Length: 328
Ligand code: ACO
Image (cartoon, rainbow, N blue to C red; front, side):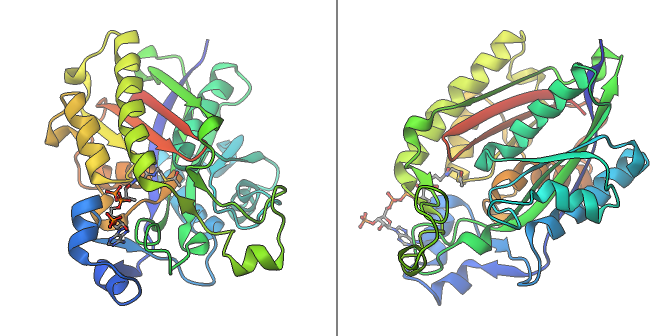
């Protein structure tokens, strides 16, 4: 049986920075409030003429180069995004594959909001372990600035743009393999984080445009409480199932939604500050891109060494959540 292993990580961080002070000029808020409630100081914003596929392709190029593979080796492209270039079709994965020069490859998107990269990892693992594919490119790419209502002070300061990517491939060495992944959902809480307009339930209309219903709406406080509870129990179960403890984890790379959520989950799991990778302060919440962007930062800082055990953990609209443990 083939196992699935992580081979590389890459990211694209848009250069344009929007600070909390920029938001002070736009909405009734303050740098102090945002920092205290979320840990965010600034976030990145893509150019007007850039779409999610443009961010994703740059992250993918870096991941391919670092994996030391030829792009022709890739036989599956999966893009996790909730800000696709086009609302319904074609998929962003198809566009990224084409921009990479891979016109004849299986490619599709995954919609799992902030849990998208963990979901993509689980699908790549399944394809590789089944023997259907050997080398999979997974991408988390988001242009959240395209679905933000910059007059809604409860959401607009939270999110940023960016992309991350990884190459996963088949191995017969069990010690290199992804140890375990668990992805779950509960659609009963669909109203907590939504873009209510523009889909088949509320198709595009003047009302949708006037009320900015294609922008993200979030019940932040309820989401916050569920996130802490769910993430903590989910990770505990995954560690126990694999006879692992907090001491086996070198790097905890959580979805970067809110510093207080990360701290609460980290404390509940007895993880030290050195184990937790934090980028929320400089990138905000980049949804499906947040975990690979954070992993890329830690990799470039030299914090991640070969063989280190990494724990992913994410929570998002759906609701969806998931965690993964693997050596890098
Ligand atoms: N500036 C100043 N005050 C504000 C702002 C702002 N930008 N926004 C809200 N407030 C006020 C509120 O009006 C409220 O005032 P009141 O007490 O007079 O009524 C007060 O601040 C507290 O509001 P809460 O909503 O209770 O604030 P909370 O502490 O919950 O923080 C936040 C809000 C940061 C959004 C937090 O709830 C959060 O991070 N939630 C989780 C988000 C998340 O994890 N999402 C999942 C992934 S996202 C995805 O899947 C797309």
